[in-house]
Amino acid sequence: MALVTSTPAVPDGDVRRTRAVRAGRTGGRRIGSHIFLLVLVIYFITPLWWLTVASTKDTAGLFTGSGGPLWFDDSFSFFDNIAGLFQHQDGIYWRWLGNSFLYALSGGVGATILSVLAGYGFAKYRFRGRNAFFALLLGAVMVPMTALVIPTFVLLSEIGLINTIWAVILPSLLSPFGVYLMRVYTQEAIADELLDAARVDGAGELRTFFQVSLPLLRPAIVTVLLLSVVGTWNNFFLPLAVLSDPLLLPVTVGLNNWQALSNAGAGGEQVWNLIVTGAFISILPLIIAFLSLQKYWQGGLSLGSLK
Amino acid sequence: MATTIAPVTARPPSTPRKTRPDLKDRRRQRWGWLFVAPFAVVFLAFLILPLLYAFQMSLMTSTLATGTNFVWFDNYAKAFTDPIFLGGLLRVGRFALIMIPAQMLVALAAALVLDNLSTWASKFSRLLIFVPYAIPVVIGALMWGFLYSPRFGPAGDLFGLLGLDSPDFLAQGSIFASLVNIVTWQWAGYYMIIIYAALRGIDPGIYEAAVLDGASGLQIALRVKVPMIASSMVMVLIFALIGTLQFFTEPQVLRAVAQGAIPVSYTPNMYAYSLAFSYSQFNYASAISFALGIVVFIGSYFFLFLTRKQSGLK
Image 1: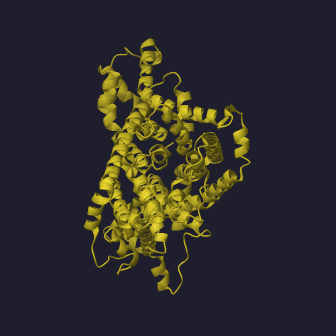
Image 2: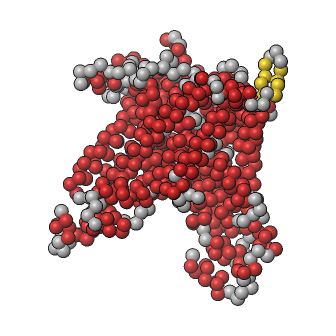
Image 3: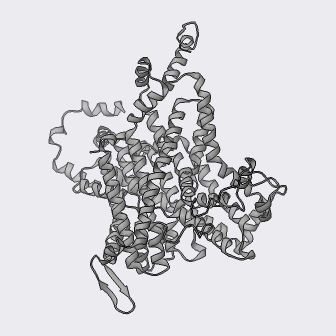
């Protein structure tokens, strides 16, 4: 191997050598690497494959499908299941899905706006109390958010916000980690000289922020947005605690309730096929969002570890 | 960028750098508060206020007979001698010891292998390994609940191929491992992406020197690459530690299918939840939440302190 790549007669020898150097290994072992990856991919994908297949089955097919749990049944009931989601409890599933969208987008977008503003403020201004506040914020990154759920519940119920959409949206606006990421990124991406130049040219602080800084922050904004949307979309403990009206539940809590009922309940309450199909549909939006925004988050997720 | 800076330096020294902290500048720095203010409001309302309130609640008891009384740290004394709370704390500690290394190992191995490859297959695998992160934890736990279930899951068939009886994943003895598996599946891909991005940031010239010195691929991975991404690893570990100590969603969801194996007080968070919402003991639940918060906070600070060399934090 070493002989081949160092022979000048091989036209792309240089390219290959740098690649081998980058890899730090020889070609033959790549097969082993690919087998390792294949095993990992099978492990990570099997549950999703199961879910995809299971969403095309009716309840009987889920238990005793002709193709087994990991293959399609003879009958294809995906569209029947979707129709079932529209009928069961007057189509409450779609309401849940809509709620999830509402909570995730308003909470996520709101948290991102606050993070971008605050991160920029921390990074580019030396105001009084900055260091103390930022130290407090760094400590807050380590406060487990679930420890806040019960006191938040009690506080919200005292001002009568419990069991309203605000009980989920308002606490979701808090994202100390988002602020931290934005501060780190702003410091790296925007030079003070650039801002000074804009100011000398007569731009005010707001105009400098919107027209000079904001465009440069785009990759970090997308990353923080994705992280906070995922965080809110995933949230389970908070809505579980603060919402009791079935019409306000996000899809995660709703499906969990169906599952608990189906396990405990009699035949009429067993809606396994609807749970599975509902779960399948509910994971599509985020998967699509991640796949279509890859170029932004792939670099952005490592931001926090910059020194 | 260089062109926009040039006029500034070329300008006559009307705003020399030395007199920076002048009045105008100080007035400008106040803009910082305006930028930070909206976040500060949310921070006060949904972090500081609940924390203070929880702390205040945790210092009181409330019973029908005697009303609300101030009892100082009685609830904490009760919590730290409550075998249910301590048992839960011990359990999440055990989860941390097993689950975090499991996730890190999978994530690190995957990232190191992916860093060595640049084929379409490796790019595709990177995405597929990451995909579970995009799935809500509840849905992931529901899905694994089905997969573990002897009624729905493929385990019976798979073990049947080998002529074996499938183990009961939801039994008391195996639920721990089943939960470790769910969490690893859900988070390893996310950690892998963070580590992978850090590996990509290393200058490949460093490997060249190591290769010339005759280092093998494994040696380069363990002796050159891993030390260089230490700060990312520390960050991943902190995330995993905070997440594990507040373990709630997965056992709560699996409880529906494995009632015998997961009691309501399986983790400290589940205990606090059931105290508050099943027994209306909000004062004691606040004390449990607060105590857990303190444990997590001290735990992660202690960990950051231990790894301050690796992470480069001071």
